[in-house]
Image (cartoon, rainbow, N blue to C red; front, top):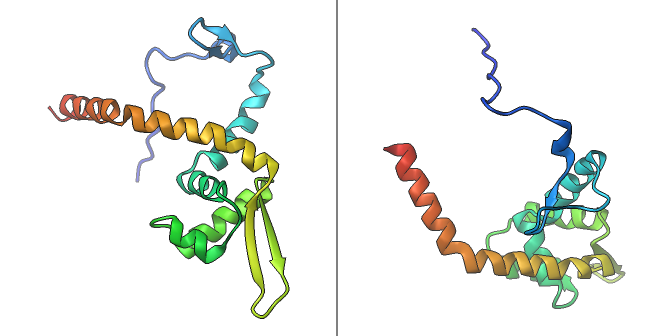
Amino acid sequence: MEITRPHPQEGTQSYASHTRVPHGDAGDIVPGHSPAACPAVTEVLSRVGDKWSMQVVMQLGYGSMRFNQLRREIDGISQRMLTRTLRGLERDGLVDRTVTPSVPPRVDYALTPLGQSLRGPVALLGDWAVANREAVAQARSEYDLREDG
């Protein structure tokens, strides 16, 4: 079996200036941005930007909830995925898990202040998605026609 390696994409080269990230309409450079910070940003965005984390954060914005209540409110999430998502959000300091000793034990989940601070950006992203869903669908259709034709 022969292993083939992809060729570098034509016209793409890495330059030192590529570490300057434009921001805003004026093309300003993000203050304090450094190439070393990119992996940290990517790591955080991979947590907060996934489909289930966003939904958990928005649901918990209404107040603390128990596991099964969250599962009922988030359409399509499996028990395993909700468990993994809550653990990740707890590890990242966005969700608190409180166990109340009883029979059976009661477990409640709530947003931390850091988690609460994420609700605004998540809501803005959701608003953007709703406002632009038709434009995205149109762009996808046009792209598919070009690629298939």
